[in-house]
Length: 446
Image (cartoon, rainbow, N blue to C red; front, side, top):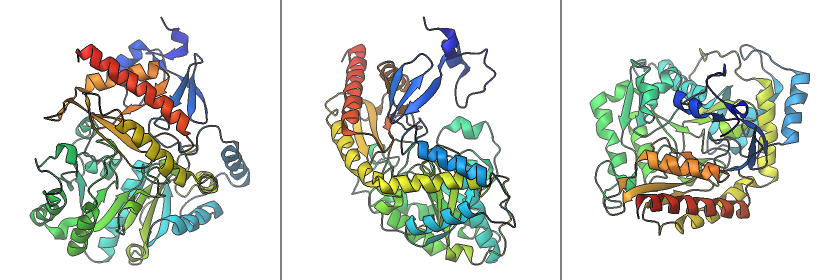
């Protein structure tokens, strides 16, 4: 029996996010420190973290003194000043750096506290763009079933996964429109790529015509989706979506909150596809999770007609996280962690493919250090393996010293380790995953 003083239970005053109270009855692990790609709990157990802090922000690894020093130095220099009517040096410098590294024509930036706030701010900027162009009726947002775009206000209406997050808060702000995701392994349209002619993308045009293009502000999507587990679309997909948006005067918001800053083996996920975004949302890897920060970038074309951005968050353009982001980007570039993500990601994906001999491993997919195993109870029909069994494997992995996570779509186990992970650490993780899959199959009688 585990020592209750070393685990959080119902007696704690802390409210956890997205955690059933039943978990507290068993006791929740308390993480006390991190080092490199490992974290340690209050009982002294060490875990190899294959999901970079579960929500995946820790790109440069745990325990970086120079990031702590950057935060300390900025607090001593200027701890805070308003984002309204005044500027500060770290925010201006970070905007300049992002203008150099973001893809294409993204050139103007504002900073928030999280990815959820970044998504909502991008939607506000899109609305401002249309408003000042005298298209005041454009308020609807197109998202995808299976999308995850945070949980704030108007952004929540674009949430296409984790239904309870959306449904409990309904009724939401009007204007959320959902289209199918490019989930080829279990195509929602029952088609097979490439004979499908990318119908999931082409059908967006029908939805736009039905909803009325004069009412639609933006289309938002992650370049590589998390909900189904590191789901990269067919190569033609984003080109078709971009063309449709251009045809109807709809802005394209690319959500890089997870994919940005090297996760996929490029600085930004959309760089795997030959298109230009109108707005870009960022967070997580921008500071490697050391302090909260979200960001929104847009093109000069989007920014030019906006006379004033009627928006204010107390902690917008905050100098301290902006200083942390500058140091974090410096580390990413100095240590060539983007290139390392691509190389070690290939090693990870190769190892995951070797697990496809297991009867319950349906599809393995990945881009850079963003990968997943999509499980099935029948390889022929691709029936979904019950979530309880996937959660069981995740729990067994944790007991063996490995942290992985359930993708929001509840069909896959996801891998997204810190970009500093070594190949031998990947191999260790693969050995544990191989073992827990075999244990699950044995329990199933396979």
